[in-house]
Image (cartoon, rainbow, N blue to C red; front, top):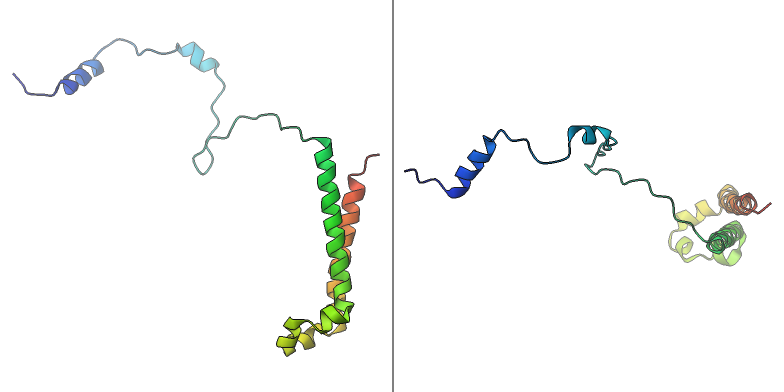
Length: 133
């Protein structure tokens, strides 16, 4: 008599059984839609759900705050290079004289002001684009 564990004998007996495996029939499996392929990280894509509806008041509030912030930043950046208090007496420029010489050039002030004007332009375009007709 062999001294094999009980689980080994059961497994070998089940593997040799000619009975079909339990489960759905083959025609049922062929009717199912194909499974999506996993992405590069091995995760299967989630099923497409309808996007949640965002309340209109929340969209308008977010747009208002975004436009106001951009306008404020645009005005501040446009005005800063021409402000004697902010630009000429800046502690960073006082600590680094070579940076102060570079920042004193009119072209540098113009580029910084241009970035502020660009920010203002983006704010106005954003406000006009989302305006209700």
